[in-house]
Amino acid sequence: MEIGVLDGENARTMIEVASEDFAPEDVEYYGFDFFSEYELLEVKAKLEKTRCKFRFFKGDTAKTLPKATGILPMMDLIFIDGDKSYKVAKSDWENSRTLMHDETAVFVHNYEYLGVKEMVDSIPRDKYQVTVIHPRSDSSTALIRKNRALVGV
Image 1 (cartoon, helix red, strand yellow):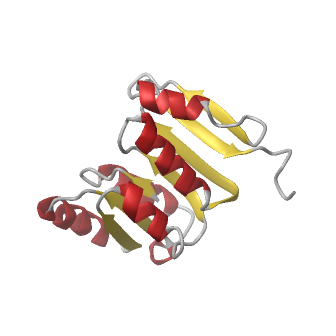
Image 2 (cartoon, rainbow, N blue to C red):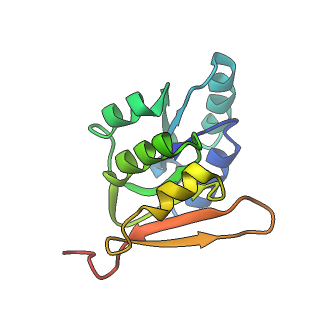
Image 3 (cartoon, one colour):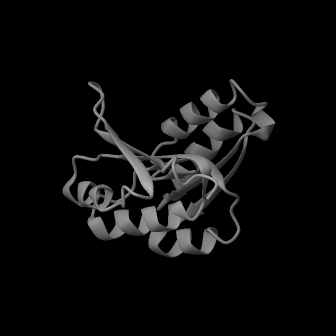
């Protein structure tokens, strides 16, 4: 699942990596964004080439994500790269975490943005392991996983 799809390049890359271990038809992708009609067509064309199953949710994630959590499966990977304000980043995290199973990896892009940093830093470390990754060629990204001591509890 990805929040903040933009041009679909990150989506395509994630699907290609997943397709190394799974048949493309078994890979499912869910994308959330405001999507203009052009953007939606562009991303759809890219993902159709991957042969994965995909579904888009158009609009403000404060509205679309809470509705979707009731119908979406548990996620293996969630990539949050939406609005950088604390309020929206917190809402995206709170809704996304309901879709986590014990092995889910959640990546939060743009950790250096004040609102994103504040949200990530507020995540309880007794429940979640948080590691901030600082790649040379991209923005800092937080990796969030359920705390191993609590997995299965």
